[in-house]
Length: 213
Image 1 (cartoon, rainbow, N blue to C red):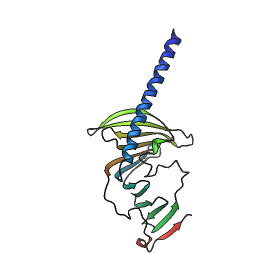
Image 2: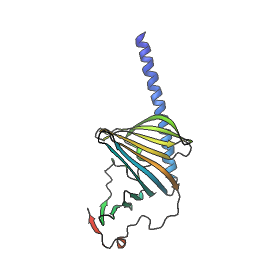
Image 3: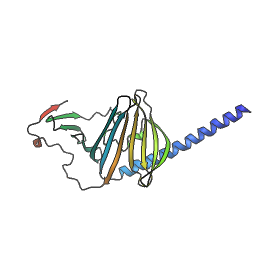
Image 4: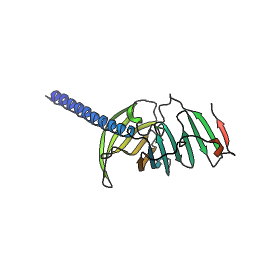
């Protein structure tokens, strides 16, 4: 009798998990479809890095403009421009610019162009808690990296139930580091310059340019 109850419990738990996974997949698909429906996206965000063991608590703000896989990222005093082929990292403090080609094989890094759709491969996912944040319903989805070499233990992706926009992204590292990216402003289909994602070397006459390839 105990075995029958145990087997029944396992089956019910399995069906419940599958149902949760389907709900999570459906919500992630809605987020992806919403993101791809926009011509461009402009985001202001806050980034927090915490590690209680190392006594690290850092907060930074930034913004990013994205169109297809191109982007301009301003973060911690550094500007990154990706024109679809090359990345230009501009560091005003050092008056230095690093130019590197896009590496298609590097799937581990969540770049700005992948930030809103990175979850489509390489993760197991399930529904997590639903929170009320200043009157907004935020549904969290737990993502577990399938690559055992990934240094992230898990990721919590907070999604605004009404807009289907990402509200925040919480990464838990295997060594106790927690990083949180919170979207403060999410604008779409903005008027952009035709040279928005073009690097102009003439703007930086005194900068040292380091070409990696």
